[in-house]
Length: 108
Length: 113
Image (tube, rainbow over all chains, first blue to last red; front, side):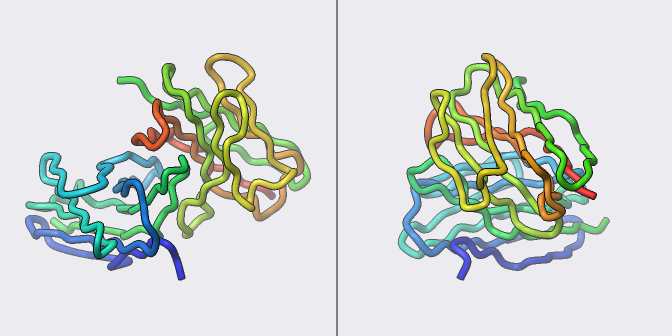
C-alpha cells in the first residue's frame, strides 16, 4: 500500500466548476505539501501545512491530522489550472514522499 | 525572485556512459535534494545533502550514483554507468531549513539509449 494515496487520478471539469482533490496518508507526518506539475514537467510548491487550512487566491488546502486526510480545492476553475496536482508528505526527515498525482483538465 | 536552476534541460546518452546533472540551488539554502520521475510514474526521492555530506539516500541511490557540491553554488548528481532504466526526469530541490518548503528546479530529462 502506498504511503500517500490521491483521488481521483484524473479529473475533467468545465471552466468555473469547484474542484476538490483528495489525499490520504498512512503514517504520522510533520507536514503535508501540495505541488503543481505543469505539462512541461516543472514542479511548483503550492502549500505546506501541518494543521488547519491555508488559502492562496483561488486555491484552498485543508488537513485533518486525526483522519490523515487533506484536500485541495480550486474555486472558479480556469483552463490555466490544468496541470497535475501532487500531494507529498514529510516526516521530520527532510525527504518528501509523493503521491501519484491527480491530472486535472479544465475545459473552456 | 530566486530560483533553482538545472542544466542541461535534456541529456541523451548511450547506455554505460557517465552523466553529470547540474543544479544551482537558491543561494542561501542549506539542504539539497535530488528526486527522479520515470515517465508516467510518481516522483521518487533519491538523496538529501546537508553540510557537505549525504544525510539520507533511498534504495535507488546505489553505488552508480554520487552527489557533490564542488563549490559554493553547484550541486551535481553523477551516474557512473547509465542503464536504460535510468531514463527519467531528474529534479533538484533546495530549502533553507530542515522541514521547510522545498523549491524545485525545472528538471533534466535524461534519455539513455
